[in-house]
Image 1: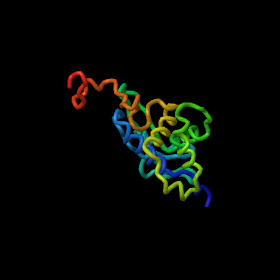
Image 2: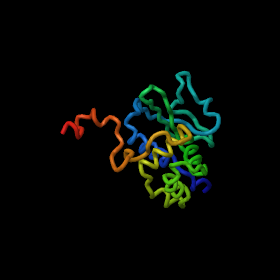
Image 3: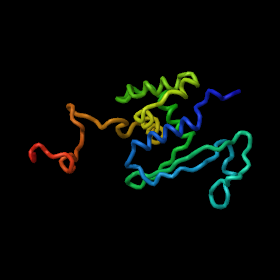
Length: 170
């Protein structure tokens, strides 16, 4: 059967779920269903949504979509196709930026045989990297553990946090 090697909706949705789990500054998260394929605009009803009982053509299928906003109120949306575009850009872009070492596991995952790829789990850092490239075309913010400087966690507001006392106050 053709297309069995393709990255599935379940795989891309899992990537986005991981990204959202390590992005607590994103809010107003709303998951919904979407139709993928050509001419989906003809399925939209008067309410702006595709009815649950819509008749899909052979080259259309149900999928997922998620929308959310950042602290400035900027709305963003991810879906299966957008995540695939970000993943493809990440894998095929030969940019030698500082995150090139973070891309290596994603590239390996991408090129694994289908059954192996589906049994492997990307880290939330790798999932975040993929989604950032899908949304912004680049890495915008740290993807994993908090950045460290000289072995210390980089936190410009540590002196204002109640659980961390400044050495001068101790």
